[in-house]
Each structure stands twice: as C-alpha cells, then as structure tokens.
Length: 153
Image (tube, one colour):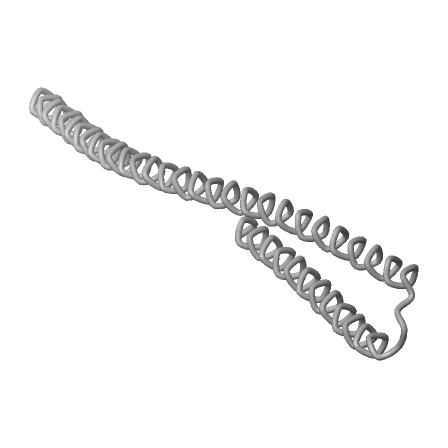
C-alpha cells in the first residue's frame, strides 16, 4: 500500500537524521578530546591567554553548532512523528472505507441475486402460461377439426 511505503520512507528519514546527529556528537566528542589532549600538553608549557581564549571561543562555537543541530534534529523528529501519525490515520480511514465498500458490494450482490431469482421465476411462470395457452389453442383446433369432420359426414 502507499501508506506502508510512506511510513517506511518516514522511518528511513528519521533513522538517517538520528545517524547524522550521532555522527555530529561523535565528531564533537572527538574534537573535544583532541582539545583536552592539546590542553594537557599546553598545561606543561607556559600558558598563552590568547590561545586559551581562541580555544574557548571555538569550543563555545562548537557547542552552539551542536545545540542547533540537535534542535533541528528534534524538530525534524517531531515533524516525522506528526507525518507518521497522519499516515497512520489515513491508513485507518482507507481501511474503514474499504470495509464500507466491501459491505456495500455484498449488499448489492445479494440484491442482484434476489432480482435474478425473481426474474427467473417470472420467466418460468410466463413459459408455463405460454405452454398452457399453446395447449389450449391446440385443444380448441382439435375440437374444431372434429366438429368440422363430424359435420361433413
């Protein structure tokens, strides 16, 4: 059915969004760990305030980007959930309509069978009347012929 395909598409899109979000989190975590390792190395050296500020600003920027990405993924998840609910509702409506149409078809089939049976009975009745009429006419002719032949003698 179309709705099954739509649900599968929505699920596939949702899984793709989740995978992208997961990859983003792993990338951020990797960068954070690299920053931590670099920070530990720098801790052994004299600290440069401007480098520290740049690193902090970069970390803040990465956190902000990650939050935006997470919010977008959550919005998309909500949209997909709404779409899935709508497609499920549509599927239920289609099933209900199919059931109604099947019921209507059953009723029409029953009515048609009844009409056909009535028509067949009427046709048989007409055939019997026609046969009786033919027999009646034949009997009248036979009697007329007997009367004519008796009158000639």
